[in-house]
Image (cartoon, rainbow, N blue to C red; front, side, top):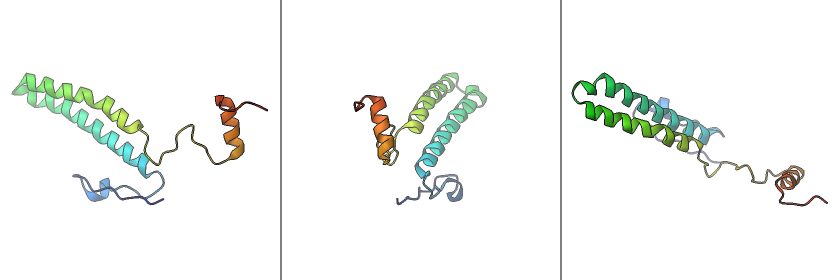
Length: 110
């Protein structure tokens, strides 16, 4: 399997470069999740620590945007990638696949 390197982001190439190992996709999703949650926390802190001094409606708007980020971050972190194995995909072990098919009701016991 060929792993592509992720493009460096704004905080530095060494910090954000994807590692070339089999869990590359999981690491990328985890990193995206934590970046999104960091933005969420940053919006809350900026809204009530700085922006509210000049404009309370803008601070409330920032909090509404921050409120939408966690569910989106969870969806991003839990989505299935093209290389991820899904729960009902065959594992390659015929005995195990036969056993799981029987449990799922896909195949009758003989």
